[in-house]
Image 1 (spheres, helix red, strand yellow):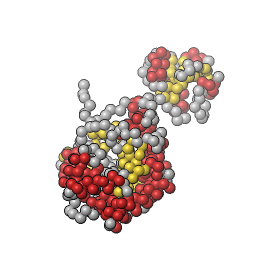
Image 2: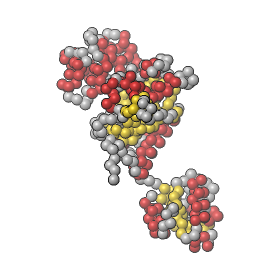
Image 3: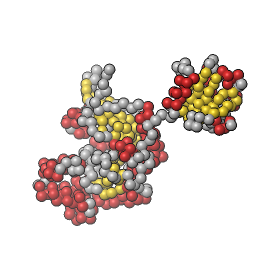
Image 4: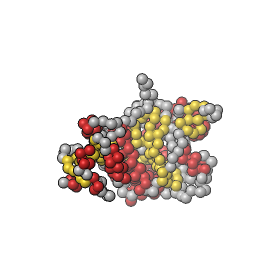
Length: 434
Protein backbone atom coordinates (compact mmCIF):
# COMPACT_ATOMS: atom_id res chain seq x y z
CA UNK A 1 0.00 0.00 0.00
CA UNK A 2 1.27 3.45 -0.91
CA UNK A 3 0.96 6.49 1.36
CA UNK A 4 -0.25 9.81 0.07
CA UNK A 5 2.51 12.43 -0.34
CA UNK A 6 2.59 15.00 2.45
CA UNK A 7 0.86 18.23 1.57
CA UNK A 8 -1.44 16.71 -1.05
CA UNK A 9 -5.10 15.79 -0.67
CA UNK A 10 -7.45 13.12 -2.00
CA UNK A 11 -10.99 14.26 -2.83
CA UNK A 12 -13.56 11.45 -2.71
CA UNK A 13 -16.91 11.88 -4.53
CA UNK A 14 -18.91 13.42 -1.66
CA UNK A 15 -16.23 15.94 -0.74
CA UNK A 16 -15.57 16.71 -4.38
CA UNK A 17 -19.28 17.31 -4.98
CA UNK A 18 -19.23 20.05 -2.33
CA UNK A 19 -16.11 21.62 -3.82
CA UNK A 20 -17.57 21.43 -7.32
CA UNK A 21 -20.69 23.27 -6.15
CA UNK A 22 -18.50 25.99 -4.66
CA UNK A 23 -16.29 26.27 -7.75
CA UNK A 24 -19.33 26.43 -10.04
CA UNK A 25 -20.79 29.26 -7.93
CA UNK A 26 -17.55 31.27 -8.01
CA UNK A 27 -17.06 30.75 -11.74
CA UNK A 28 -20.69 31.64 -12.43
CA UNK A 29 -20.15 35.04 -10.80
CA UNK A 30 -16.98 35.56 -12.86
CA UNK A 31 -18.90 34.84 -16.05
CA UNK A 32 -21.68 37.25 -15.03
CA UNK A 33 -19.07 40.00 -14.83
CA UNK A 34 -17.82 39.17 -18.31
CA UNK A 35 -14.59 37.39 -17.37
CA UNK A 36 -13.54 34.83 -19.99
CA UNK A 37 -12.11 31.46 -19.06
CA UNK A 38 -8.54 30.56 -19.97
CA UNK A 39 -6.37 27.48 -19.40
CA UNK A 40 -2.69 27.62 -18.51
CA UNK A 41 0.22 25.14 -18.32
CA UNK A 42 1.34 23.39 -15.17
CA UNK A 43 5.03 23.94 -15.99
CA UNK A 44 6.89 27.20 -16.53
CA UNK A 45 10.60 28.07 -16.74
CA UNK A 46 12.06 28.33 -13.24
CA UNK A 47 13.82 31.48 -14.41
CA UNK A 48 10.49 33.28 -14.63
CA UNK A 49 9.99 33.01 -10.88
CA UNK A 50 13.64 33.69 -10.04
CA UNK A 51 13.60 36.90 -12.11
CA UNK A 52 10.44 38.03 -10.33
CA UNK A 53 11.22 36.99 -6.75
CA UNK A 54 14.95 36.19 -6.48
CA UNK A 55 16.96 32.98 -6.16
CA UNK A 56 15.53 32.19 -2.72
CA UNK A 57 12.15 31.43 -4.31
CA UNK A 58 13.56 28.15 -5.69
CA UNK A 59 13.40 26.62 -2.20
CA UNK A 60 9.61 27.10 -2.28
CA UNK A 61 9.11 25.57 -5.73
CA UNK A 62 8.66 22.09 -7.09
CA UNK A 63 11.47 22.66 -9.59
CA UNK A 64 13.61 20.25 -11.58
CA UNK A 65 15.57 19.77 -14.80
CA UNK A 66 13.50 18.00 -17.43
CA UNK A 67 14.68 15.53 -20.08
CA UNK A 68 15.43 18.40 -22.42
CA UNK A 69 17.84 19.88 -19.84
CA UNK A 70 15.43 22.76 -19.16
CA UNK A 71 15.01 24.14 -15.63
CA UNK A 72 11.26 24.08 -15.04
CA UNK A 73 8.89 24.44 -12.09
CA UNK A 74 5.33 23.49 -11.28
CA UNK A 75 3.47 26.81 -11.23
CA UNK A 76 3.21 28.24 -7.68
CA UNK A 77 0.84 31.05 -8.74
CA UNK A 78 -0.91 32.27 -11.88
CA UNK A 79 0.00 35.96 -12.14
CA UNK A 80 3.38 35.52 -13.90
CA UNK A 81 1.81 33.08 -16.36
CA UNK A 82 -1.06 35.37 -17.35
CA UNK A 83 1.42 38.26 -17.59
CA UNK A 84 3.44 36.19 -20.04
CA UNK A 85 0.28 35.35 -22.00
CA UNK A 86 -0.72 39.01 -22.24
CA UNK A 87 2.72 39.98 -23.52
CA UNK A 88 2.58 37.34 -26.27
CA UNK A 89 -0.69 38.65 -27.77
CA UNK A 90 -0.83 42.14 -26.32
CA UNK A 91 -1.52 43.87 -29.65
CA UNK A 92 -4.29 41.46 -30.62
CA UNK A 93 -6.29 41.52 -27.39
CA UNK A 94 -9.12 43.98 -26.83
CA UNK A 95 -8.75 46.03 -23.67
CA UNK A 96 -9.63 45.63 -20.94
CA UNK A 97 -8.66 41.97 -20.89
CA UNK A 98 -10.81 40.09 -18.37
CA UNK A 99 -9.75 36.50 -17.66
CA UNK A 100 -10.43 33.80 -15.10
CA UNK A 101 -9.37 30.22 -14.50
CA UNK A 102 -9.59 27.55 -11.83
CA UNK A 103 -6.64 25.19 -11.50
CA UNK A 104 -4.11 23.65 -9.09
CA UNK A 105 -0.82 25.21 -7.97
CA UNK A 106 2.16 23.83 -6.10
CA UNK A 107 4.44 25.28 -3.42
CA UNK A 108 6.99 23.35 -1.43
CA UNK A 109 6.19 24.75 2.01
CA UNK A 110 5.11 23.36 5.35
CA UNK A 111 1.41 22.39 5.24
CA UNK A 112 -0.81 24.31 7.64
CA UNK A 113 -4.47 25.20 8.19
CA UNK A 114 -5.96 26.00 4.81
CA UNK A 115 -2.69 25.57 2.93
CA UNK A 116 -1.43 22.40 1.28
CA UNK A 117 1.50 21.93 -1.07
CA UNK A 118 -1.02 21.41 -3.83
CA UNK A 119 -3.90 23.88 -3.71
CA UNK A 120 -6.58 25.16 -6.08
CA UNK A 121 -7.48 28.76 -6.86
CA UNK A 122 -9.89 30.64 -9.07
CA UNK A 123 -7.88 33.54 -10.46
CA UNK A 124 -9.71 36.61 -11.78
CA UNK A 125 -7.77 39.43 -13.47
CA UNK A 126 -8.37 42.65 -15.39
CA UNK A 127 -5.59 43.97 -17.67
CA UNK A 128 -5.56 47.33 -19.40
CA UNK A 129 -7.45 49.63 -17.03
CA UNK A 130 -6.01 51.87 -14.33
CA UNK A 131 -9.44 53.28 -13.46
CA UNK A 132 -10.72 52.85 -9.89
CA UNK A 133 -13.71 51.05 -11.36
CA UNK A 134 -11.49 48.10 -12.28
CA UNK A 135 -10.32 47.69 -8.67
CA UNK A 136 -13.91 48.07 -7.49
CA UNK A 137 -15.14 45.45 -9.96
CA UNK A 138 -12.63 42.93 -8.62
CA UNK A 139 -13.89 43.68 -5.09
CA UNK A 140 -17.48 43.37 -6.31
CA UNK A 141 -16.79 40.03 -7.98
CA UNK A 142 -15.21 38.70 -4.77
CA UNK A 143 -18.07 39.94 -2.60
CA UNK A 144 -20.76 38.57 -4.93
CA UNK A 145 -19.00 35.20 -5.06
CA UNK A 146 -19.05 35.00 -1.25
CA UNK A 147 -22.66 36.10 -0.89
CA UNK A 148 -23.75 33.72 -3.65
CA UNK A 149 -22.19 30.98 -1.53
CA UNK A 150 -24.44 31.97 1.38
CA UNK A 151 -22.15 34.28 3.36
CA UNK A 152 -23.24 37.68 4.70
CA UNK A 153 -21.55 40.91 5.80
CA UNK A 154 -21.33 39.41 9.30
CA UNK A 155 -19.16 36.57 7.99
CA UNK A 156 -16.29 38.30 6.17
CA UNK A 157 -14.40 41.56 5.90
CA UNK A 158 -12.27 43.00 3.09
CA UNK A 159 -9.31 44.83 4.62
CA UNK A 160 -8.26 47.36 2.01
CA UNK A 161 -4.97 49.24 1.80
CA UNK A 162 -2.66 50.86 -0.75
CA UNK A 163 0.93 49.87 -1.40
CA UNK A 164 1.94 53.38 -2.46
CA UNK A 165 0.65 54.81 0.80
CA UNK A 166 3.01 52.43 2.59
CA UNK A 167 5.90 53.12 0.20
CA UNK A 168 5.40 56.88 0.27
CA UNK A 169 5.13 56.93 4.04
CA UNK A 170 8.39 54.96 4.36
CA UNK A 171 10.13 57.33 1.95
CA UNK A 172 9.03 60.31 4.03
CA UNK A 173 11.31 59.22 6.90
CA UNK A 174 14.18 60.60 4.83
CA UNK A 175 16.62 57.74 5.07
CA UNK A 176 17.63 54.82 2.87
CA UNK A 177 14.86 52.35 3.66
CA UNK A 178 14.44 49.03 1.88
CA UNK A 179 10.80 49.62 1.00
CA UNK A 180 10.09 46.10 -0.19
CA UNK A 181 11.57 44.55 2.96
CA UNK A 182 9.62 46.98 5.16
CA UNK A 183 6.35 46.19 3.39
CA UNK A 184 7.01 42.47 3.76
CA UNK A 185 7.47 43.17 7.48
CA UNK A 186 4.08 44.92 7.57
CA UNK A 187 2.56 41.89 5.86
CA UNK A 188 3.90 39.72 8.71
CA UNK A 189 2.85 42.11 11.50
CA UNK A 190 -0.24 40.17 12.52
CA UNK A 191 1.65 36.86 12.59
CA UNK A 192 4.66 37.80 14.77
CA UNK A 193 5.29 39.49 18.11
CA UNK A 194 5.75 43.26 18.12
CA UNK A 195 9.44 42.96 19.02
CA UNK A 196 10.09 40.81 15.98
CA UNK A 197 8.00 43.08 13.79
CA UNK A 198 9.89 46.20 14.87
CA UNK A 199 13.13 44.29 14.42
CA UNK A 200 12.19 43.54 10.80
CA UNK A 201 11.45 47.23 10.22
CA UNK A 202 14.83 48.11 11.73
CA UNK A 203 16.49 45.59 9.42
CA UNK A 204 14.78 47.41 6.54
CA UNK A 205 16.42 50.71 7.58
CA UNK A 206 14.17 52.42 10.13
CA UNK A 207 15.31 53.24 13.64
CA UNK A 208 13.37 51.66 16.49
CA UNK A 209 11.56 54.93 17.23
CA UNK A 210 10.73 55.39 13.56
CA UNK A 211 9.42 51.84 13.40
CA UNK A 212 7.10 52.54 16.32
CA UNK A 213 5.95 55.82 14.78
CA UNK A 214 5.40 54.18 11.39
CA UNK A 215 3.33 51.43 12.96
CA UNK A 216 1.28 53.91 15.00
CA UNK A 217 0.42 55.81 11.83
CA UNK A 218 -0.68 52.61 10.08
CA UNK A 219 -2.69 51.38 13.04
CA UNK A 220 -4.64 54.65 13.28
CA UNK A 221 -5.91 54.27 9.68
CA UNK A 222 -6.33 58.08 9.55
CA UNK A 223 -5.80 58.99 5.91
CA UNK A 224 -5.73 62.73 6.54
CA UNK A 225 -3.07 62.30 9.21
CA UNK A 226 -0.96 60.24 6.80
CA UNK A 227 -1.15 62.90 4.10
CA UNK A 228 -0.21 65.58 6.59
CA UNK A 229 2.66 63.56 8.07
CA UNK A 230 4.20 62.58 4.74
CA UNK A 231 3.65 65.94 3.06
CA UNK A 232 4.28 64.45 -0.39
CA UNK A 233 2.31 64.28 -3.62
CA UNK A 234 2.96 60.55 -3.71
CA UNK A 235 1.05 59.81 -0.51
CA UNK A 236 -1.65 62.36 -1.33
CA UNK A 237 -2.20 60.74 -4.75
CA UNK A 238 -2.29 57.25 -3.23
CA UNK A 239 -4.85 58.31 -0.62
CA UNK A 240 -6.92 59.94 -3.35
CA UNK A 241 -6.80 56.72 -5.39
CA UNK A 242 -7.81 54.59 -2.40
CA UNK A 243 -10.77 56.87 -1.74
CA UNK A 244 -11.76 56.71 -5.41
CA UNK A 245 -11.75 52.90 -5.33
CA UNK A 246 -13.86 52.87 -2.16
CA UNK A 247 -16.29 55.35 -3.73
CA UNK A 248 -16.62 53.08 -6.78
CA UNK A 249 -17.12 50.12 -4.45
CA UNK A 250 -19.99 52.06 -2.87
CA UNK A 251 -21.61 52.52 -6.27
CA UNK A 252 -21.03 48.84 -7.06
CA UNK A 253 -22.86 47.88 -3.85
CA UNK A 254 -19.94 46.34 -1.94
CA UNK A 255 -18.57 49.19 0.20
CA UNK A 256 -20.15 47.63 3.30
CA UNK A 257 -17.69 44.75 3.09
CA UNK A 258 -14.60 47.01 2.96
CA UNK A 259 -12.56 48.30 5.90
CA UNK A 260 -9.51 50.55 5.51
CA UNK A 261 -6.62 48.63 7.09
CA UNK A 262 -3.19 50.04 6.30
CA UNK A 263 -1.48 47.13 8.06
CA UNK A 264 -2.70 45.04 5.13
CA UNK A 265 0.23 44.93 2.74
CA UNK A 266 0.27 41.69 0.68
CA UNK A 267 3.73 40.14 0.75
CA UNK A 268 4.39 39.85 -2.98
CA UNK A 269 6.64 42.61 -4.28
CA UNK A 270 4.83 43.15 -7.59
CA UNK A 271 1.79 44.85 -6.01
CA UNK A 272 1.70 48.59 -6.77
CA UNK A 273 -1.62 50.14 -5.71
CA UNK A 274 -4.77 49.12 -3.89
CA UNK A 275 -4.46 45.73 -2.17
CA UNK A 276 -6.92 43.83 -0.03
CA UNK A 277 -7.32 40.65 1.96
CA UNK A 278 -10.50 38.86 2.98
CA UNK A 279 -10.74 37.75 6.61
CA UNK A 280 -13.17 35.76 8.72
CA UNK A 281 -15.15 38.45 10.54
CA UNK A 282 -15.43 36.24 13.63
CA UNK A 283 -11.70 35.62 13.76
CA UNK A 284 -11.90 31.84 14.06
CA UNK A 285 -9.74 31.39 10.95
CA UNK A 286 -6.41 33.01 11.71
CA UNK A 287 -5.13 33.36 8.15
CA UNK A 288 -6.57 35.49 5.38
CA UNK A 289 -9.22 33.76 3.30
CA UNK A 290 -7.74 35.20 0.08
CA UNK A 291 -6.32 38.42 -1.26
CA UNK A 292 -5.76 40.51 -4.32
CA UNK A 293 -4.71 43.88 -5.61
CA UNK A 294 -3.18 45.99 -8.34
CA UNK A 295 0.08 45.14 -10.11
CA UNK A 296 0.59 47.76 -12.78
CA UNK A 297 4.28 47.12 -13.52
CA UNK A 298 4.33 43.36 -14.05
CA UNK A 299 3.43 43.23 -17.75
CA UNK A 300 6.16 45.74 -18.60
CA UNK A 301 8.69 43.81 -16.52
CA UNK A 302 7.89 40.76 -18.67
CA UNK A 303 8.78 42.68 -21.82
CA UNK A 304 5.34 44.00 -22.72
CA UNK A 305 3.93 47.48 -23.14
CA UNK A 306 3.00 49.28 -19.89
CA UNK A 307 -0.32 47.70 -18.88
CA UNK A 308 -2.16 48.29 -15.62
CA UNK A 309 -3.63 45.19 -13.99
CA UNK A 310 -5.63 44.13 -10.96
CA UNK A 311 -6.79 40.71 -9.75
CA UNK A 312 -7.89 38.40 -6.97
CA UNK A 313 -7.47 34.66 -6.31
CA UNK A 314 -9.87 32.85 -3.93
CA UNK A 315 -8.60 29.43 -2.91
CA UNK A 316 -11.42 27.05 -3.75
CA UNK A 317 -10.08 23.66 -2.68
CA UNK A 318 -8.00 22.58 0.35
CA UNK A 319 -7.73 26.27 1.22
CA UNK A 320 -9.23 28.83 3.59
CA UNK A 321 -12.43 29.65 1.67
CA UNK A 322 -13.89 26.19 2.35
CA UNK A 323 -12.94 26.68 6.02
CA UNK A 324 -14.90 29.94 6.12
CA UNK A 325 -17.96 28.34 4.52
CA UNK A 326 -17.79 25.52 7.04
CA UNK A 327 -17.42 27.93 9.96
CA UNK A 328 -20.43 29.93 8.74
CA UNK A 329 -22.53 26.78 8.28
CA UNK A 330 -23.03 27.21 4.54
CA UNK A 331 -20.68 24.54 3.25
CA UNK A 332 -22.49 22.46 0.59
CA UNK A 333 -23.55 18.99 1.60
CA UNK A 334 -20.80 16.46 1.04
CA UNK A 335 -22.89 13.87 -0.74
CA UNK A 336 -23.46 12.60 -4.24
CA UNK A 337 -26.94 12.90 -5.71
CA UNK A 338 -28.70 11.02 -8.47
CA UNK A 339 -31.96 11.89 -10.19
CA UNK A 340 -32.83 8.37 -11.38
CA UNK A 341 -31.64 4.84 -10.92
CA UNK A 342 -32.95 2.49 -13.63
CA UNK A 343 -33.26 -0.94 -12.06
CA UNK A 344 -33.30 -3.88 -14.43
CA UNK A 345 -34.77 -7.27 -13.45
CA UNK A 346 -34.50 -10.27 -15.77
CA UNK A 347 -33.96 -10.06 -19.51
CA UNK A 348 -34.92 -6.38 -19.84
CA UNK A 349 -31.63 -4.70 -20.71
CA UNK A 350 -32.69 -3.24 -24.11
CA UNK A 351 -35.70 -1.46 -22.60
CA UNK A 352 -33.89 -0.43 -19.42
CA UNK A 353 -30.99 0.97 -21.44
CA UNK A 354 -33.41 2.90 -23.63
CA UNK A 355 -35.17 4.43 -20.61
CA UNK A 356 -31.84 5.43 -19.09
CA UNK A 357 -30.67 6.96 -22.37
CA UNK A 358 -33.87 8.99 -22.80
CA UNK A 359 -33.65 10.30 -19.22
CA UNK A 360 -30.05 11.34 -19.79
CA UNK A 361 -31.05 13.07 -23.02
CA UNK A 362 -33.40 15.18 -20.87
CA UNK A 363 -30.39 16.29 -18.82
CA UNK A 364 -30.91 14.14 -15.74
CA UNK A 365 -28.28 12.32 -13.69
CA UNK A 366 -29.01 8.64 -14.29
CA UNK A 367 -27.38 5.41 -13.20
CA UNK A 368 -28.22 1.87 -14.22
CA UNK A 369 -26.97 -1.57 -13.27
CA UNK A 370 -23.62 -2.46 -14.79
CA UNK A 371 -22.73 -5.30 -12.41
CA UNK A 372 -25.55 -7.83 -12.98
CA UNK A 373 -26.78 -7.50 -9.39
CA UNK A 374 -29.93 -8.76 -7.73
CA UNK A 375 -33.02 -6.64 -7.18
CA UNK A 376 -32.19 -6.03 -3.50
CA UNK A 377 -28.54 -5.23 -4.24
CA UNK A 378 -29.60 -2.69 -6.85
CA UNK A 379 -32.05 -1.06 -4.42
CA UNK A 380 -29.33 -0.80 -1.79
CA UNK A 381 -27.00 0.80 -4.30
CA UNK A 382 -29.69 3.26 -5.41
CA UNK A 383 -30.12 4.27 -1.79
CA UNK A 384 -26.35 4.70 -1.33
CA UNK A 385 -26.11 7.16 -4.24
CA UNK A 386 -29.11 9.18 -2.99
CA UNK A 387 -31.26 8.38 -5.99
CA UNK A 388 -34.48 10.40 -5.85
CA UNK A 389 -36.44 8.05 -8.09
CA UNK A 390 -35.97 4.41 -9.03
CA UNK A 391 -37.43 3.23 -12.34
CA UNK A 392 -37.95 -0.53 -12.17
CA UNK A 393 -37.89 -2.30 -15.51
CA UNK A 394 -38.85 -5.89 -14.80
CA UNK A 395 -40.05 -8.75 -16.93
CA UNK A 396 -43.48 -8.71 -15.27
CA UNK A 397 -43.71 -4.93 -15.75
CA UNK A 398 -42.97 -5.27 -19.44
CA UNK A 399 -45.58 -8.04 -19.82
CA UNK A 400 -48.06 -5.30 -18.89
CA UNK A 401 -46.28 -2.72 -21.10
CA UNK A 402 -45.34 -0.61 -18.09
CA UNK A 403 -42.52 0.33 -15.71
CA UNK A 404 -42.66 0.90 -11.96
CA UNK A 405 -41.66 4.31 -10.57
CA UNK A 406 -40.63 4.49 -6.90
CA UNK A 407 -40.03 7.59 -4.78
CA UNK A 408 -37.03 6.70 -2.61
CA UNK A 409 -37.81 9.23 0.12
CA UNK A 410 -41.40 8.20 0.77
CA UNK A 411 -41.27 4.63 -0.51
CA UNK A 412 -44.39 5.25 -2.58
CA UNK A 413 -44.55 3.77 -6.04
CA UNK A 414 -46.81 3.51 -9.06
CA UNK A 415 -46.68 2.32 -12.64
CA UNK A 416 -46.46 4.17 -15.96
CA UNK A 417 -46.98 2.98 -19.54
CA UNK A 418 -43.59 2.13 -20.97
CA UNK A 419 -44.42 4.02 -24.18
CA UNK A 420 -45.09 7.20 -22.15
CA UNK A 421 -42.04 7.11 -19.89
CA UNK A 422 -40.14 9.27 -19.87
CA UNK A 423 -42.10 12.15 -21.43
CA UNK A 424 -40.36 14.42 -23.90
CA UNK A 425 -39.75 17.13 -21.29
CA UNK A 426 -39.67 17.51 -17.54
CA UNK A 427 -38.57 15.46 -14.56
CA UNK A 428 -41.24 12.83 -14.05
CA UNK A 429 -41.88 11.29 -10.63
CA UNK A 430 -44.35 8.70 -9.36
CA UNK A 431 -46.81 11.54 -8.59
CA UNK A 432 -47.16 12.28 -12.31
CA UNK A 433 -48.62 8.83 -12.89
CA UNK A 434 -50.82 8.29 -9.84
